[in-house]
Length: 615
Image 1 (cartoon, rainbow, N blue to C red):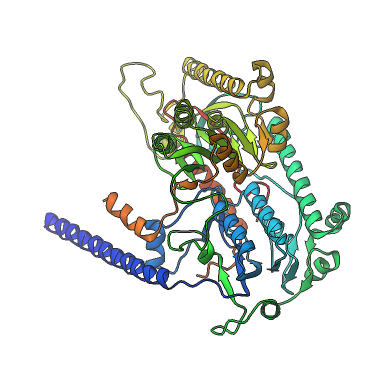
Image 2 (image 1 turned 90 degrees about the horizontal axis):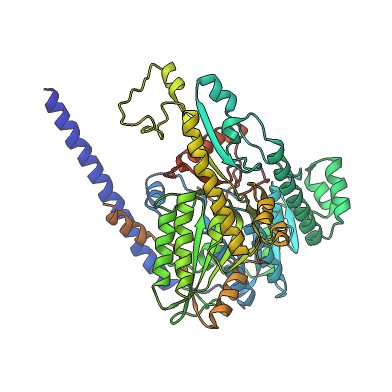
């Protein structure tokens, strides 16, 4: 009888899964067919239209697209992920809109929805710069905000006309970097953590071994926040025409700005509800006969994506013939494969680089790094393949995004030239090893380990026991060797003597402007600057830009399935309770990313995509 029910439940499970997959694939195919008709019938924007830039997105460096998980969620539930756009496509859309005679201006609304390593300060700053350039075309930028965060307001500050909802509020309070520390909890519940590291400033292990920031770590974080806040205030002051001293005084008087106070101080131009803004846009542009509102085109319909045929070629990009590849390294670097924007496998990136340098059509490679580092083994895989590409005569240029620290800086040593943003977080030249011990915690719940082994250290990677002094000494020697290699790589690539590198290393983190002065990078510039430099070095003027990974369509998602056999415009904020739970989740994810075969890492644990800008 037992086997009978077991067989029934087994068959039932198979039937359910099969039916689910059949329905799912049918939905995907139907969506693809519908999309193909939409493509054919797609029309250019009506003359007098506004391009709608809804900030309710996760702005990433790395291109993304549809995944099976995303499509399943949207097909079977009402839950939708925030739309994800990558910086390059948004900037290109804004550049295209500046030259598009059909576009009258840009409407900015909504608020950023950061996830993973998205919405980094340098990426947002590049977006702001593209909007500043757009204004030079003589076209207007209209903004409507309700409760903008400080990061949102960096974009809103560019607007020619900025309207604020009468019920809104703007909290201008400065920057903070908060970290959850688990040392006391670990001690209480019997979790042991043994650490080996090199570098006085290597604070990646502190969340697991301490109850607060070390003085060295506090010093460098404070320096980064001070530089960032100064840059932020300077940008807002310039864009809004408000003296920076007056702005500082206003914050000291009170950090919560009502709409009336914002209008009074020049932070916004007018207090208006959404209906009034719609009327204003209709007057500036033209009415849409179908909606009886202003004529508009949404960003998703305007960017260059597989489902949106381009209306015009990019300024530097021509299809066919010579190519320049942009390989994106976004997220924590892990050993092995995979790439989801949160973590990326060293072997995955190395494979893409190898594919590029073996193809004679590619005349140059730009490695865009937005990563706090991670596995030394994974970083070394990327570096080795970059060196092969250079040995084959392919120009390799590094473009640093919001962060390129630790392992992210390690891979940068494979470039001929390094660009970084003024606010890029980089450096962190140091190495550590983290060895957890769960024996006491498990014992509390009646769980015990036993082992049979051929050598006292055969179970060195086990979490079931503390490591002996001799074992720790051996691991420390390994970490020391890796650190010396890191120093040598930097000294050789940057043409700086070892003693000088030792002074700026020690795991210390630097802002882009400091890194430039110290010689850790070659030039301050954007991704576009990096592409232009690469083309010049390759001696080409006409070329096609190919992204790795490329934006995926629903059809690509279906192919992956076979290979591997809401209103998104709403401004959402994270509650204080959820933020604490997310801290635990992030630390758990961090443990998952510690998969280096030798337990050696070069990682900046406290960095978040929107570093300093809390919600």
